[in-house]
Amino acid sequence: MTGLQLPDRDDLELLLEELRLLLANLDIEVVAVSTQKKARPDPAFLIGSGKAEALKVLAEGSQADLIVCNDMLTPIQLANLRAKTEREVWDRALVITKIFEKRAVTAEAKLQVELARCRYELPHLRGLGRQMSNAGAGIGTRGPGETEFERHRRKLQVRAVDISRKLEEIRRRRDSQRKQRRRNGVPTIALVGYTNSGKTTLLKRLCGDEKLYAADQLFATLDTAVRSVRSPSGRVLLFADTVGFIRELPPQLIAAFRATLEEATQADMLLIVLDINDPDILATYDVIQMTLQEIGAAELPRTIVLNKIDRAGSFRVARVKEQFRGENIPVCALSALTGVGVSDLWGVFDWLSPRRE
Image (cartoon, rainbow, N blue to C red; front, side):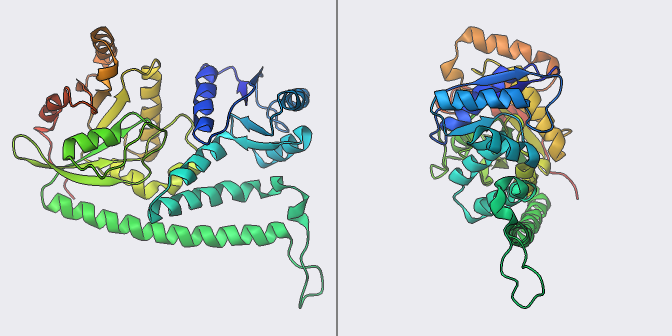
């Protein structure tokens, strides 16, 4: 595993630890870590030719058959690193995409992940090696047939267009459902936040649906789940679970999951769920804020939910609450697992009404 320490990056250690956890979810063990300080990424190797040679020696010495870069690689960097190290090379985007592939269960999730994979592979075809330049038989033509690169590129492009069409149909259907809910006067609250912060567990606690799948793992939820909940005052509310965020979430995944993430952008309120035991909780909150900005949901009303207080002491709860006092938005501390503090959440919805068309 390797990472680049750039002048404007102060969270490399955190990113590498996160990458290690991502790889663990793929049952891949990290046996060695290499970092390098550079003013800017090397256009040919990302980490520089000399460091790439040293990485090859490190991989040989640790008997590693895979090298994973924390940074996203260009096609040229990917091809050069593979040639220099004589190893399979992945970047952070591919690791996250592979986890999504592993977690996808429903037809919609599988389509979204496949679209993300198509969009990832298209610019990287040149980095797949010489086999991509082999020409096929030129039946019915004067010269050689199209190369493997051209065939594969055309296949990916056609498949991406087909998947995009199917997902657009899903998006339109969801939009129609949202409009109907607004006409019925039912507000929607979207649960957003970092992966494995407990969003689905909280939804299960609120609606009582034990069929919802929640697990202590990254990206357990890839599909939007919308559930109707009657509050203690008798009011009907809709809660929507969404796919979790992560640092440097690949842009092709954000684009592919547009239909799912629209539940957040079109909600009447956001519940930003945070793990109160996260040692870098403010940095995680900033990542969520940036992701909400990217998907167009940054200006929505929100409440911060500090989850998993059953694993935290009272001092930690008070300290983190104080850290968020300056945000000037409601903050609730609770345990979705045990139910402690969940009753305090209902008060933040008293004023909520659905958007007008």
